Amino acid sequence: NAGVTQTPKFQVLKTGQSMTLQCAQDMNHEYMSWYRQDPGMGLRLIHYSVGAGITDQGEVPNGYNVSRSTTEDFPLRLLSAAPSQTSVYFCASTLAGGHTGELFFGEGSRLTVL
Amino acid sequence: TQLLEQSPQFLSIQEGENLTVYCNSSSVFSSLQWYRQEPGEGPVLLVTVVTGGEVKKLKRLTFQFGDARKDSSLHITAAQPGDTGLYLCAGDPSGTYKYIFGTGTRLKVLA
Image 1 (tube, rainbow over the protein chains, first blue to last red):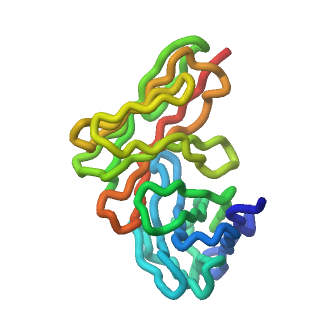
Image 2 (tube, rainbow over the protein chains, first blue to last red):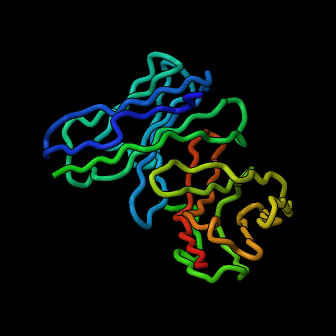
């Protein structure tokens, strides 16, 4: 009964380092997305995907890359981390084909960039 | 650009009191969702409202979708400490799966 799994849960980086946040779901959901959550800002959409091989930008895509080679996985890459990317990151998924679908979230990945 | 504005941002009340949280937008949404998030966890869906004017009840929580489908409210009757959490409204204004979230209302219910 895994649902949406995010790794790592915590990460500290130095400015300029790169890393990948992993997201995997076992519900055969077509839609997957990444959000960042900052105090007073709610959740802001970074990138999303409606299926394998298809990705698109959200509200705050700069500094992040994504790919979707399988239905299950949707990794988020930070190529050169900056202190402004310190945040809590959430991956979410839902069945595509309708706009009222419930978003299922992972437990989050807390990233600190020094 | 924040398309969904929530108010109030913070709310601290005593157990047994009633409260209302508002979610407002200048855009029309085909549906709006409400989520609750607890510390260290991801948001969890409470309800989806689809029809303008719709009212849905979930135990002591009442959700309403505005007639023009630009706003929604969440009313909690006789709040309990277990209602403590961050409440978020969310929707897809363009029908392109760009789900956006409101700024959030952090509720604390004191025993």
